[in-house]
Picture 1 (tube, rainbow, N blue to C red):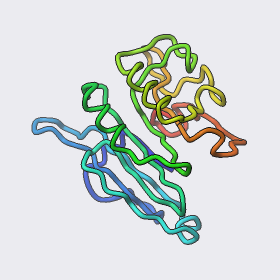
Picture 2 (cartoon, rainbow, N blue to C red; picture 1 turned 135 degrees about the horizontal axis):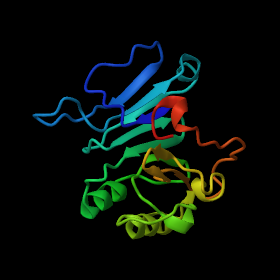
Picture 3 (cartoon, one colour; picture 1 turned 90 degrees about the horizontal axis):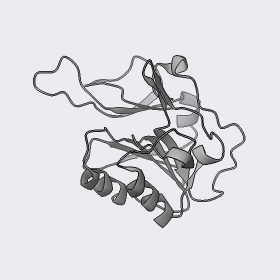
Length: 183
């Protein structure tokens, strides 16, 4: 299970599951950190598969190699510039066994059934089109918000893979109340 925006500054969650983290950043005068990505892996899963953390030089990516699959989980904060987002996306390795997921903070409008687009829209669609990736939110979760607040909802969390890569039978966006996170 991948979790974005953990605010986890150090150490681990109190659980017996295997854990991998990209820790949150804490500005000098802030009471808490921002960002952070965690992956919690059930003991039965981690005992069956070799799991290796891949290193990246940015705090916005947690990448794991699990068997023949590479999973890139991203949290791209809204304050990142388009140049920074582009650099992060283009640094990711892609092959036929790659899965991308996370909080991209991109609003794609009619592509996902969202109500609007944002400044990252064109950059993101060009990236996934160029890399021939399938955006599962367009077929398995169209119009389903991944972020909800008192100010409204949006679709900013995505899962992408090479086309027809995974036989998805039970794709579900969990309600905000389920985990207290975006999806």
